[in-house]
Length: 152
Length: 242
Image (cartoon, rainbow over all chains, first blue to last red):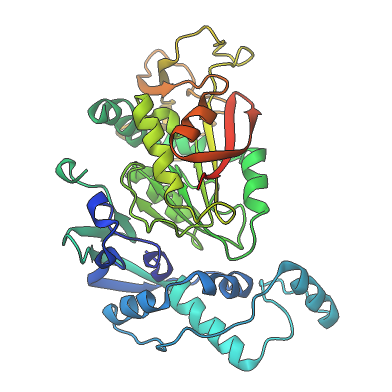
């Protein structure tokens, strides 16, 4: 399970939906792996506004690494500007890059986000609801959120 | 109801996962268009993602695919390394309400075995979406009206049916023959190749009549933006009504 995914997961128990404690779910006994995936700055830049940064900071801490307290700022990218920029630079961006106009600082932030959100996988472990305490298992990178019948 | 679906939907998919997956690789055009017109950075769910064939259609969006069937979820995870998956039930989804730009549910809602449960399933998808204007879902269900398919159902046929899936030889338990030259089932097929030794698995379906999907969406608190018929299926693009 990616750290990005954890930002969109909460407890599956209906009674927990209204509780702020049901998000984010808390990692326990997590084993991590880094899995290389294609770098996509267009996706990352536009994902950023949709993230709950505080929840991401919390999840990261539970997995043993530290993110900046404040959400980094990145300009939004569009596919149109990508094409224009790419043409101006004569750069085809075959690796999915967003072409010129990216400062070193922005590139550094994007690479950091890529590594944290996309390449960090929780291979084994648990996610625990802060409201009801139910533990969801993660096995071979897949989280199991099926509830026992008494909780449905 | 839940126990019935467990026997006639969940257990069947667990058994046929590998063969089913081999027959599911070509996205339907309406689904393809819905996904490729999303703005970059959109975040969505694919509820009942099966083998994950829609997860890679648009690399500039992020999708969490979920399915009740763990075997299919594992296949999806391997096929979509830039996306993610979870094992989850449509009626108890492990997601934050109102947080998604889009949702897909393709060929899933017809597996729920009462009108109340089908409406509840649609409501549980709508609940995940951002408010009207910001979040939308594409729903797809099997149609009753498919006179030209080889199943030949029409508007007077029985709506609640058990449809057999026959495993072709190479997908049968216990041991698969390595390097078998037998081709997998075809895209259109809902059943594997017939064979006298094959054991059929029966899956429950509710076949939707014209207009019924739209009615269910409204009962669930949704608004239909667009709907239509495509190759034996009814589809609707919907958002939250309020």
